[in-house]
Each structure stands twice: as structure tokens, then as C-alpha cells.
Image 1 (cartoon, rainbow, N blue to C red):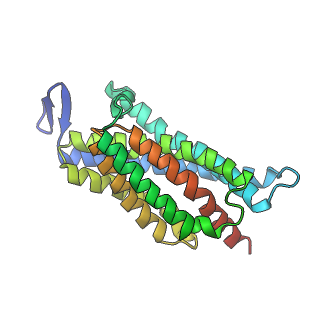
Image 2 (image 1 turned 180 degrees about the vertical axis):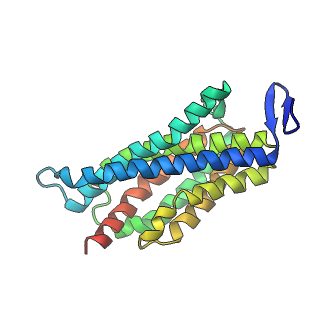
Image 3 (image 1 turned 180 degrees about the horizontal axis):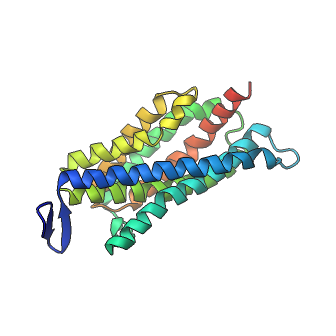
Length: 247
């Protein structure tokens, strides 16, 4: 046992600085991989012509969410899988092997219902024409599962597990993981939404991290909430961004 490591109940606990450094390094790896894969996918989009009768903007949204979703899955899960393999740990231990608690399910579904109401009545969903059309629904079917199954294991399961091993308090785990989640969305700063999306996602990430703790560190409640959130919200946001830059 070294000075910055401690074995407690069979689990290795780190010093805070070491745990935070691991989280920062893994996030940097994820972010760099995401950007590298994004630069590879960009040239493909102009060569994928829409089918006859497809709305041009919604077709562009479908292409973007499909390719972005796949790159997000790779960028988030590959680093975590490699790290867990080296450490002799499993994906299941991040929160897939626990169903969650009733309180966590009620809290996250109630919160998500409120967000869906806001998005459809006051948010971007009401501003995107054709938001319930077949091409919009296709985008929803792709982006919801991809985002949830990529980002929840990384930002809730992996990062919060590392912070817990670093003996950060529960409050600090929630705040730091939410901060990372907000920073992961800084690419939206170049869009008309500006700072609103990184700030919103940072706060939403803290809420989901709190639910993760409430669920006794089960990922399932936040996976379902994330899936609903992105399926409802992201296609319309991508549509509004595409419409803005096509003027």
C-alpha cells in the first residue's frame, strides 16, 4: 500500500489528486477522440444524398445525429472499456447490475416529464417545423439510445466511481461530474444557442448525478431519462442549427 492508495473492503481508494487527475485525463481522451472522429465523419455528409421526397434539413439532421451518435458511443465507451480492462474491473460494476430505487425512478421520471413539457411548449421542439414527422422521429430513435448508452456509463458510472475512490464527498462527485458533462457540450458555443446548452447540460448532469446516487449507483434511471431527454430535444436543436447555417 502506497501513501496515495488505500485498500478498504477489497476496493482500491486513491488520494483525491490522483483520482481527479485520472478523471481529467480520461475526459481529455474522450474529448479528443470525439473531435477526431467528428472530423472524419464531416466529409461523408455531403456525399449522402437524401431519398426522394425527404425534407433537406431533416435529412441533414438524420445524418448528423446518426454519425454523431456512433462517434459518441465509440469515444465514450472505448476509453472506459480499456481502463476497466487494465484495472480488472467490469462495466456491470459501473451501475448496470443494479435496478435502482423507487425514489430515484419517481424523481427522474417526474423531472423528465417537466422537461418534456417545457421543451414542447416553450422550448425548441415547438419552434422546429415537422418535429413529429417521420424523419424527426428517426433522428429521435437514433440519438436517444446512442447518447444515453454512451454518456451515462462515462459521466455517471465511470467518473463518479473514480471520484468516490478518491474519497470525494457525494456533493463533490455530483458537482464535478456535472461540470465535466457541461464542458463536454462546449461545441454548442458556435451555434445560436451559445452558452445556454453547456450551462443547461451541466445543471442537468448534476441532477442526473444526484439521481444516480439516489438510485444506489444504478445507471438505469439516468439512462432512461437521458434517452427520453435527447430523443425529444436534440433533433429539434439540430434542426434549428441546420436552419440557421443554411440561410
